[in-house]
Image 1: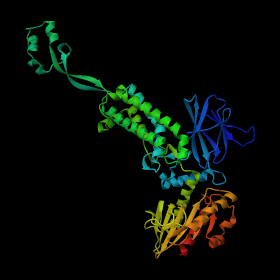
Image 2: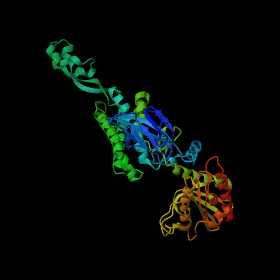
Image 3: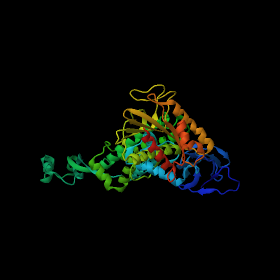
Image 4: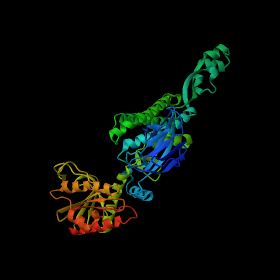
Length: 514
């Protein structure tokens, strides 16, 4: 059993208890917690492969950062037996309610589920059928560790009672072991002599050996060949992932990978050893070659044990993230990354409602970007909306017109409107912040973007913060302030709040101003 509570609550507060496999809820990001294993000796606790430091006997301190979702907690006894628990982390109450945050995730999922891939400790549900995300190696690592042991267990069960068939062979056998003679056997004069009664001694019977068709049981069946081919693919995937993990080639920062590499490599090594034992066991070592054929797939489908193993094996190596069966928990972006993505979709939705024109995914023109959506408006103007655009340092790259006066800058959302060859630029920076002090500090990015970004030689008309919480600094949100200084903020930019409507009206005025 695992228990947890807030770290700085008063003494005697209630602990929340969960049992193996259960999900503990009620936790929030950026909050300190204590985890307890109830005085169990020689216990180590890992949260997303990071070992927690024991702050006193059986007590471990943990602080979820800015992320929301399900987190894996593994408790190791005697460094061998692992028990898994789950903790569900919610976003900060001051920024977004859980239902609002879930709705943001749902809207992103409906638009493009690949945008929900990330590398933080929290996980959310994904499909596994189509659509490859940008974190292919991270996804493969997660699925190998999640489904790989189940796949190998299924194969080990098959190896104990495998599918067999009878293999026809021609062998030279003593006459006493042959049950049916082929007519051509009468060409042997000794046999003719026996048949005609000219020779009937036992020595004559033992001395005669003839070629005869016989059958022997074999594991070399199409079904076993198909499983062997899948097992070899699995071995290659494990070996490749071991190399990626060892060389810190995943998408997360290398210092974060370093804290997790030992446990990840231990799991992969376990998979590698179990795979080797299967490959050299009698079942698969007797199979002549690993190949996937129509006959093999037919035999696999006809046997429940084989069909289940084959399905799990493919799932353990899948890097797809879309599909209706959202059962796999994969790593997600930080909560502020989800908010940035949702704000981008909100801007696109607002433009569609204002112009009545659907945007088309396009190659970014003004600056390189993670995503680009273009609108051709009926009055002859065009609009390009960039997500995570990159403005290179000191000069524009190639034929692009966007650049930065100082170092490279990456604003979250950039709108570029072109009317009769004249361009204007608007910048939004989504901030997952709340509180007067934090918002005033976050305004630094607005000033930097307003001063540094250039489209040709023109600065942005405005650089505005998008904030999920309620108003904390009213001055920054006044229209006169924004018009006069070119910077400001919009609060309550969240589902069910007034901010999205105000943003829509402001965008309508900005588009019309040109």
